[in-house]
Picture 1 (cartoon, rainbow over the protein chains, first blue to last red):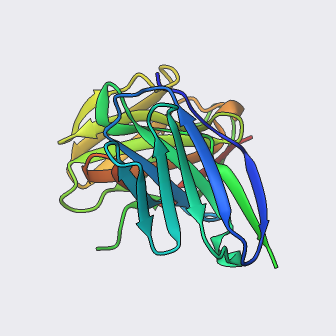
Picture 2 (picture 1 turned 60 degrees about the vertical axis):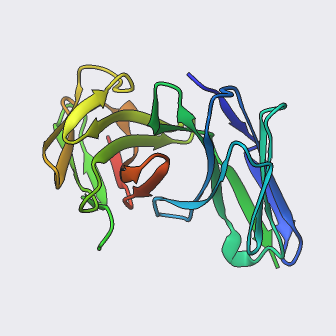
Picture 3 (picture 1 turned 180 degrees about the horizontal axis):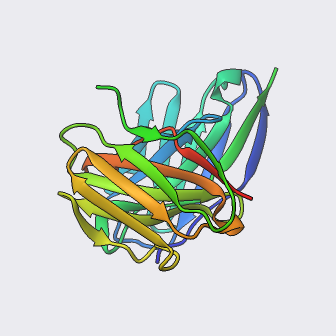
Length: 112
Length: 112
């Protein structure tokens, strides 16, 4: 199966930018996704990028995709304490695009 | 729509007991997924259904686990007999298009 790797922890100060990185192994993915999980809740789709794009911006979120290096990143501008959560990178399972393989998640802690 | 509804939110049981987790997907979604989340292994896909038919159950740990979807609005995940290593958060998710999943709030299972 596909490997999706993320760093486990990131701590930033309120107002700074956060960058969460992800690497994956399967290069046939058409869409790549970022999900967010708040404490005690399920995962929520945050944003996604089509594989023929190298950047997508959505308000404070910027997704960068480097297909050659199989590297995906999520940048959160002006990070707020409410952004503290676990962020998951996800790529479609090569056997079925409807099933996703998730990384282990990056815990983002935003300090005042 | 109320979103994906899972019950119970918390389940505490003793080793050897049968456990049944329930899920109601979002109306109109024809894909349903069961995931398990642990600190050590992250988010693992257990099984998924399309139009109530199991498509891929390769993630089901062993024969003690079984899942059913008798109709489009209901699915169960059963563990019999349960073991302490089954303790985890179990998520149900539904989808009407690839990658865009809507997750329930999860069932926190503790097997003593």
